[in-house]
Image (cartoon, rainbow, N blue to C red; front, side):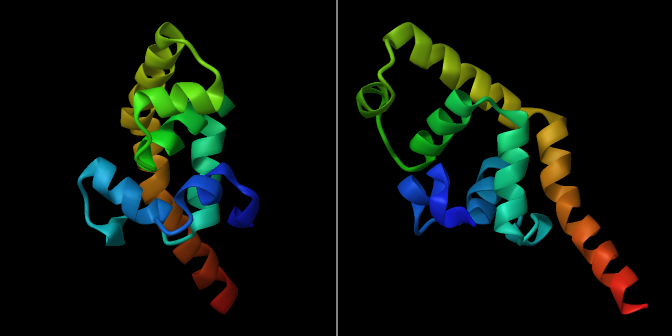
Length: 113
């Protein structure tokens, strides 16, 4: 599923799970191991442009490369970087990323019964 995503296009080798664990400063074990669900959480909580800026930043693109890739000016890029980072720091995304694993475990337990 992630083969067609912008994440895979720019970060093919880097896992979303490890990236989010680094961003939130927590062990990888606290983050869901379902990469597709993690990507969907980011898509639900960010605009397409904010998500792309975040993905490009994670991929190691500098500001000039991001502006060229997305056709942005300085002011728009700074605004998108600010809002994407602000949204990533919100408890809503942090808790969703961490509880996604617990929901997966509960669904698996229900199926076992």
